[in-house]
Image (cartoon, rainbow, N blue to C red; front, side):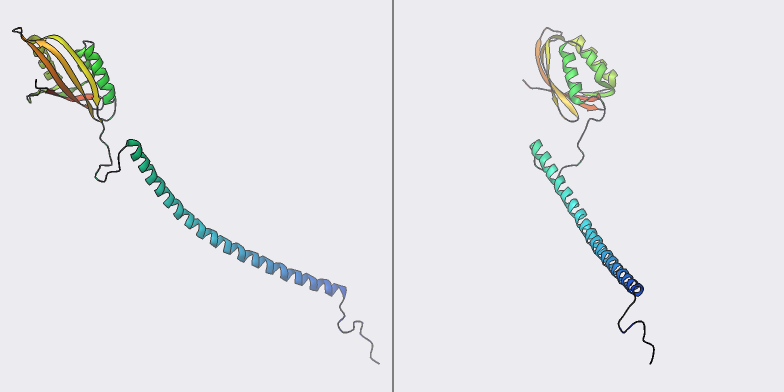
Amino acid sequence: MPKKDKKSKGEISPEELAALEARKAEKAAAKAAEKAAEKLARKAAKDGGETRETIKSDKKSDKKTEKKSDKKRADDDGMPRFKHVRRKKRSSGKGPTPQEIGESLVALFNAGKSDEAESTWYHRKIESIEEDGTVFEGAKGVAEKGAWWKSTFTVLSMHATGPYVSSTGFTVVYDGRVRSGDGTEIAIREAGVYTVEDGRIVREEFMRAAF
């Protein structure tokens, strides 16, 4: 009779069983790793889409914020957002502002120091324009006009009011009385309109009230 096999049908050794279990575990691990990789890839693609949408949303939000900010500025100024307006506002440039120069000029004038006001704030190439259209050019022209004025009139009283300020200059109103050489007293009421550039007065124009 043939010798009986050590392993009957279906019988497996412990070593073979361990090897089989190891191969199963290896396959399961590989499959799990593959699924995890696919899941991460899908999540990354989704996140990328969300990021693009988020960027678009942020841009829209920024534009809305800018519009709200513009509207708030308009509300703060008490003015609507006009269509036909230059973006860049007019300015007197660098240096002391029209407000500062105007306040100083008025204070010096009322203290009897009009010459000091001129030497402090007038540009050497200033234009001084009288109400009849006469233009005195530069510091020398202003000095000549001043010398004539002082030799022709005696100031009885004079007071400056202001300044009334804009972005590029200011206005001062002068009230007073003078006496001419023949003894006639004259009431004076005029406005001086001053243009400021880079901290200096470059133009003054006088506008006299008709009594």
